[in-house]
Image (cartoon, rainbow, N blue to C red; front, side, top):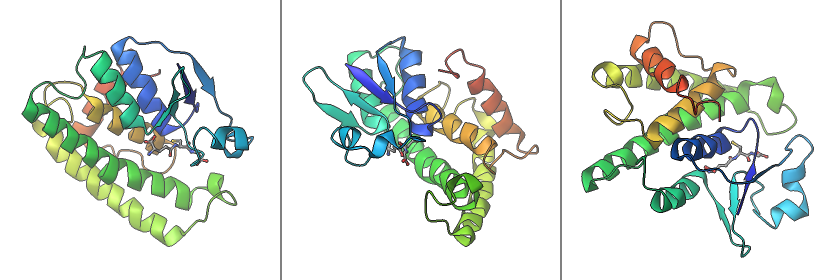
Length: 202
Ligand SMILES: N[C@@H](CCC(=O)N[C@@H](CS)C(=O)NCC(=O)O)C(=O)O
């Protein structure tokens, strides 16, 4: 088994933190996006979308999508539970993880892709859309700040995959135009809490 990884990628980081939380260690191979390795035929044979992470099994099966990979390991290694334990908890954590992906991660990525010089010439950039998404990020951060007024973690009293998704999004946002404003004190408290976990730099 092997994980195709990307050093600074938000999604591969989600999987690395998830595995670290479970105490699972598997071999990995870092794909160099800057050298275009993920667009080479050899990697496209592994994932025709040219994206990381991908989990490769010994029989040659490939599994892409960060959350699919995390779910695979959650079933094999249920402790500590990061997707919940009861029916309701699992549904709630699914809800919060989806919200973190769609309402936090995606607009933060859009701000980066559409407004940052790094992507010039690499991806089509529509700065006006970037600015629309920048406003959306601010609005969603204010919403999350209110949500976190009465609980320590995104989905409740325990650290879950929803926290992992959100923390990776905010880590990326920090250096790419979506830093958490100082007055969002609940969100900052949560961010400090999750990023001080020993697994945060996995
Ligand atoms: N939905 C996928 C997204 C994977 C993805 O977008 N990976 C990025 C890194 S965060 C990537 O490989 N980008 C390479 C590129 O854009 O060329 C997942 O959750 O795993």
